[in-house]
Image (tube, rainbow, N blue to C red; front, top):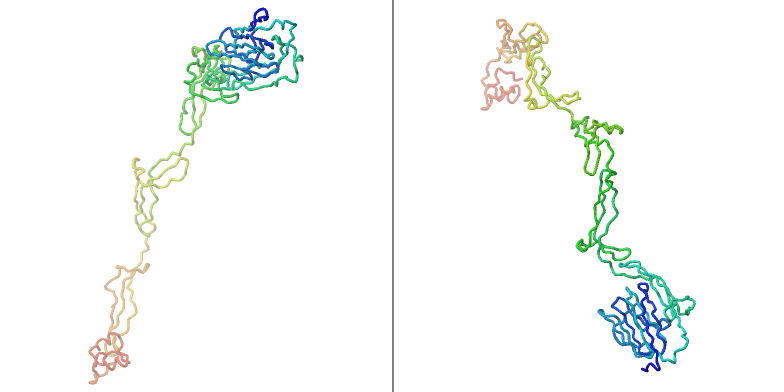
Length: 476
């Protein structure tokens, strides 16, 4: 370990506030250092880091955190103590075989870091500084849901002083650029959309906007979540008043009334008043205060669907029938009928009488005496047909004829003839004397009485076989 005669003690304190999210150099522990003691002065969110002068990390490097334990750094054993309730401590008995850089990974406020170590007094010579690269990260552009941060390389002298980058070894300059950060989803919060236009230009209107609970997942993606996940936050207003200044007087019309008709042309009316709108409501003003504005119509025409035609029913009489006779006096008749009358139509069709049952029947004559012409006066006469043939072919017989009383004009039967002058309808006729009976003239069949009735006595067979029955008839 040595004593004060052979060693000298070096102490220091680093209390600068480096940029957040950067590895910032505190000091360089020189080769040969012993009894090394490094500690935070208070609990913080920062971390101690150790690397060599070329950028290779031994502890908490490249955004990877190490746990409590023993670590070999530059040939010496270091004890690293990290607790969530106590400040960080880094200790080693040494000696270091090479220079190492002590850094702080900044995540919050720096409460101060103290360090001490011993060196052999033989090392008390003009100090030769080493120069190392340190990478700094800009603050993340977003606190959550994925932001970006820019890394940049800076050159530092062994005592922690930043110098011109040209002093450092350019071949070992770290790579820098843009990287993502804080990629975890954001906590749900209220989202407010843009305000709508004010509902009025004066007199107090309203503006609205959408307000809902949303969780941002990435730079381009978010999702709506249940409102109770934002209940612990103050909800932004969804409606606000706007344009609360009083309105100048102007004409205001109420809604039009219904059309005065249900079909065809009619009219509508409305009430027109002079008003001024304020946040307390509308104020009625004299009409003269609105005379500077064009007046508004109070009456207007309205056109409803075309009206259906008006249908009425009425009694009328039919035309007279023909006269019941063709000459002299007869009778003609007509009947009462129900007609349908359609508005603007010349047609009056006949319908069932029930349609006119509630309409009084007019008093009309439904029958009348008529005459077409006087009948011609003619005398009836006896008409006789020609006489029939004599009923016998020999001896005494009879002849008959038709006798009728006919109208001279119509040739129809009449009863006006003088019966005392009616001609006979039967005459006596005489034929040559019949020959004397022949004893041989007999009927040979029982049915011979039918032969003269059928008029076949002139047949040779029937006349000879039925001679007695055919006697007095011509047998040929």
